[in-house]
Amino acid sequence: MRVNFARRAILAFAIVNAALFTALLPLWEGFDEAFHYGYVEDLWQSRKLPVLARTLVPYDVVASFPLAPVSNISRRAIPEGTAYDAWFALPAGERERRRLALEQLAPDPRPVLRGNYEAHQPPLAYLLLAPVDWSLRKLPLTVRVLVLRLFCGVGSAVLLFFGASALCRLLEVPESFATAALFGIFCSEMLYATTAHVANDWLAVGASVFLLVELVKLVRAPGRRTALAAGAWLTAGLLAKSYFLVFAAFAVGLAAVLVARGRTRIATLLPGAALAIVVAGPWYVRNIVLYGNAGGTPEAFEGVGLRQILAAAPRVDWPATAAFLARASLWTGNNTFNTYSRATLNVLLAGLALAMAAWFWRRRAIRSAEWTVMAASALFLAGVAYEGCAMVANHPGQLVPGPNPWYTQVLLAPLMALAYLGLSGWKRAGRVLAGAIVTLWAWILVATWMLKLFPMYASGLSSSMRARDAWNWWTHDTAAHARNLSETALAPAGWLYAALALALALTAAVWGLVMRALAKGELPVAKAQ
Image 1 (cartoon, one colour):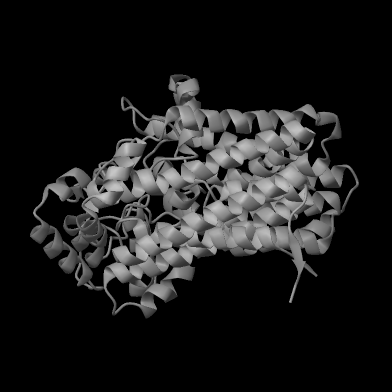
Image 2 (cartoon, one colour):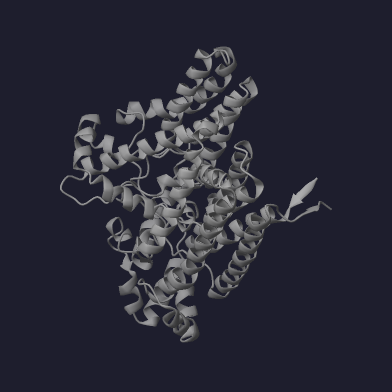
């Protein structure tokens, strides 16, 4: 067996970056994290599935709100939280006092009157986290959240790595381009912002890629075993995130086409369908009983139906929404929604658009497996647009920038696989463009750590820094920065700096391997020991 050193390095790169992200992210800085974590804790405390408008946030979570710094975006849901600018204006002794009080919080059965707006979410991802949280119940809240984040972030990175690798192999993406695609996937700040905090996205993103893998296999060679595997991943997805209803509709349509064309029989596909219906179906029946709709979304619960959503579509500024969603799908600065350089992100998006154009240019050579991935991605994107209309309908008169960008992380791996497959057909020009995209994405990740997240969480700086400003920041007041990081992040500053050094070293090393592979058209390999 031959072992690809570059792939091993990319897996290590993904794990290290995910772990660093989980440790650097301040408490509740992840998207709606306090309420997702409240779901986990409530599962083992109440031993009941939550119900929207009935399930409450646990006492220790609510008690943490005045003690931890949060972004201005997070303060919309946590108004008693202290914004970062106000946090760093506090005296050092007051910040230290709040941190010590935060680290003393433990699970407490005292009642609260704070409803959990994430109680409608499917339960599988939380059920996997609940036993871990229960086993840590005697430890401080900060430690419990950090351990669960590591479970989510590292677990998602591993799941996505193997899923994306399998998808590239099935689509027959040349090895050097597939490796470049994998490296680009794990350079995405928004991927870690989506998966490396306590929520259910960590499972949903990986499950979606494995579902696509099995659907591609089903198109290439329909069989009962493949149908059962597709049904298993669909079931996991449906029990992780309700947006898998879009993939369920796609799977039904794909099955109908295969049967109509005589490629397979209904009896062959039935075990997979039965698995999804029997295991995941009860959750969606429960939603209909409780909320009057299968998805159980807050918008539908509040009375926003299909008519209101369709009526909202003309009110959406689609060009502005598309531009926001495209850039936010790459970078948001976590829940701060601070901007990265628009010019830089636009250049990266232009490069990826050229890569997708290269894929479509060879449309006469596009195989059914590729069309399957593209069709599923397009249908999911339509579902994201629908959700954007639902948000506008549910917030009349308010400025809604667009759909939530964490949804689009489901499309990251399949679209990157198709994009690099397209570049592989351009020969030398494709290799040059692939290398340029890889280089730009690596730089954005390095700048994310060095110029954005570390300065933001250590001193409240949210604007872009020039090279001289960055040098001054990293070489002055280092003791104060380390102390501040230890008060805002979930790990000691020394651990964070060590992990940062390792992440930067791996970024440089993997970038070099990928560029060498693109230049030579092959990867350095060695025999397994």
